Length: 333
Image (tube, rainbow, N blue to C red):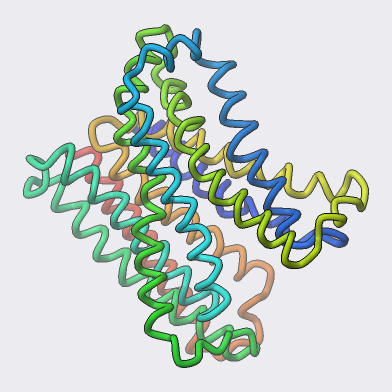
């Protein structure tokens, strides 16, 4: 369990920095970066991991009923739509508020849905109550960090005007947060694929890699369609020049993204019966903590009023408490 906990937290830290390369772009636009990033992270790396680490993966897929393959694919497809919803929300209401709503809802739903469906008997026991308490504490921490992030953007002039559709955008953020958790639910409900992979000789920590090519293929279709639309609308098809450095940026980002997902899924397997519930919440919290700590270290809060920066530090401290509570639930389980 300790090994699984460490892997999940490392995965969150890795995921928290996977989009740093997007800031290094010079010749490419967002849609050029995102297309290559999606090809690497959602297609090339997951398929490579599955074929390298799972013996007879083609035979595993051939032996499965269509239903076992269809649900992870559909979950992944809807998760891809959530990614686009997140982009709209960031543009309309800013990063701070969007991050709080999306990551908070995503962490809670990704933890509770597998718990309620797969381990309903644990809900009112010590482990289930600990997850509930940890999620409530996490919500407080996210609210503090979100308010501080929103105020920081307001102080620096980066807060986007939401206009008359503010309430609608908030609803979109909530819906996108729920849909974003479907990536974890695709793994949690891909148990038949995981079992077949283990029967074929895959090690337990590698067996979840059989789910990702199926689930992420659905997410790739959504992202591919949007990138093609953006490149056609903005006439950025010819922006793929700029040398190897420009191509290196999205390739690195895609490798970090899928690397984090791979580490998370292995860690969740190690964490036992509540791995996909507890692990997902810790994964999301680690991502949020990484972003906040990095912001403090690079001086983003240096010229911000003390009351705002203090609220952010308090939020980070509360999130650490949530990590302890939710992590303890796994041991009780």
